[in-house]
Amino acid sequence: MFELNGIAPNPRVSSVNAGAAICKKERIDVLLAVGGGSVIDCTKYIGAAAYYDGDAWDILLQKTPVEKCLPVITVLTLAATGSEMNSGGVISNPETKDKIGLTFPPMQPQVSFLDPTNTYTVSPYQTACGSADILSHVLEVYFNMDQDLQLLDSIMEALMKTVIKYAPIAMKEPDNYEARANLMWTSSWAINGFIDGGKRQAWSCHPMEHELSAIYDITHGLGLAILTPRWLEYTLDETTVAKFSQFGVNVFGIDASLPQMEIAKKSIDLVQEFFFKTLGLKSTFTEIGIDDEHFSVMAKKACMGGVLPGFKPLHQQDIENIFRMCL
Image (cartoon, rainbow, N blue to C red; front, side, top):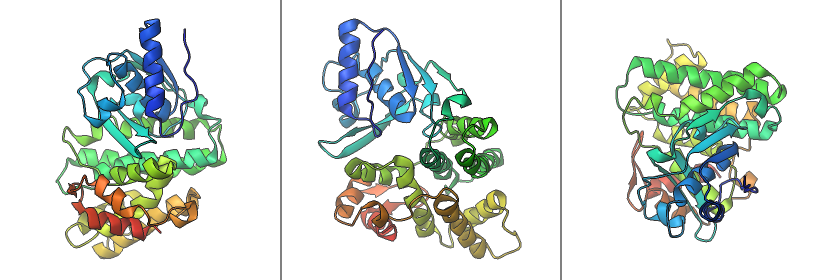
């Protein structure tokens, strides 16, 4: 048995290369990831890089198809990314200031052990950030311009209500089994592909946040909490208001008899209240030491020099505008 410890948040490609080297040298045949999303993502790519001769970064940079991966088993200790129940992962390269996420079927964990008691020691801050990440995963799918199955919308609304109900309980009562269990299970189902309904839904907040944490190495969930309400506000107009109204009524219980635009704006206010007051997360980039120095570069990379498709297509200037709303 061989151990690779010290996996950092926003896991580094250097750790992937180190793990792959151990696998090759010691002829490892199975990988056990004990931790949160960073540990699990890193382990997935170690399993893939074990069958790759070059630098593991090439897999992400060149989107080299992963056809083989060592079996990955996970023991989850933090409800957040949902990596325990999907085949994706995100890796950072501090040297190039890049953060790239890809999905390859062979990287799907073979078995994941989800014991809520393993999350009892998670701090209130990390519980808050993890909960923001879970909620963002659902919001990115829920807010789309396609008419979806009512079943899936209802399930997503239930997932969001679960996070809103149990996150503050878990923060105040860290050993509350019901709260931890509900957050853990919601984490998995928020991003295991089920709520996608078999379609590929482009996301907006995650690509923007990846550029933030690539440069500033901030906690992923915190970046999403700051970005998400501004993204919602930026995309609200007469063409999107119906979805916001549905969200406000079904998730927050806003009076359905009010004008749709009023419901929509109230729902965004309540999202902000949840992130910044209930969870107590910082509400602006300024508070966490981020200015507008890299906005242009980050925005260009987020949309890859073109357009970021999603709920509403975002060009580079749109993304810069959203970044500035977060200052």
